[in-house]
Length: 291
Image 1 (cartoon, rainbow, N blue to C red):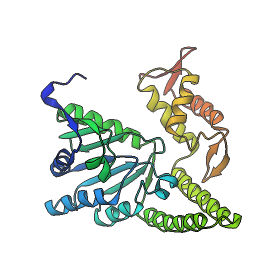
Image 2 (image 1 turned 30 degrees about the horizontal axis):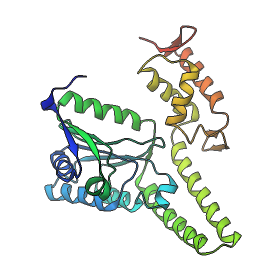
Image 3 (image 1 turned 90 degrees about the vertical axis):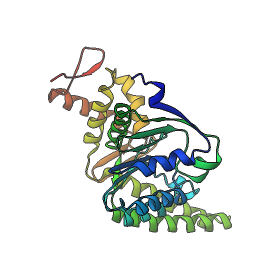
């Protein structure tokens, strides 16, 4: 899509005013996509929505990567999601393991694609750069892309956010004890707690979808862009689902397989989609069926 200069503008640091403008014009939907998110920034978003009286009706979707390591090192505040969940009836949180993009969309009126995380350094302090779109079709295309991406992730419900908040506090306490002591028992306790946090996150990924369904949806998602060989699919699917395609583990959680047999499950998903008439192969590449 080629846009006119009037439909797109550069966003330079600090981008406090463009961010405030974006949040302020959102009436129906506000999409916040960022791998790192801090409470100070989400509190500003919530305050804006409440002051304008749209907090009870607006749909707010946050897409992020809830890696325990990010929570532990302070890159993500789980408290922020707990606050948003309690205050916004239509709040949605999506965990997408491969996320690196930073994108912010207000209705179909404005979209900002930037290098800036949803943190105060990202908005105010760091040297960041991006582009703001106000062209309706372009804004809708950006939103559509990320809503499609979100379908490949795991939606985290309000109760699960509260559980995650409690587990985060336990994890930080275990880490503090491990840091203060060189004893093997303390470090082992921390590693066990970190492993537990990873497993809890994998359970969220397993909720409501099988390995087969996740991989089938991902095949359709990728082939909608272009035909692909199976060998070309492998790295793309691994990028999108690093937790499922982890060659170092072999787990089954909630019926979903995480680990070494992912290519086997991918072949099964391809065969299923082919039998269902959703995809076909020309002998080299897989294609989406037109019907």
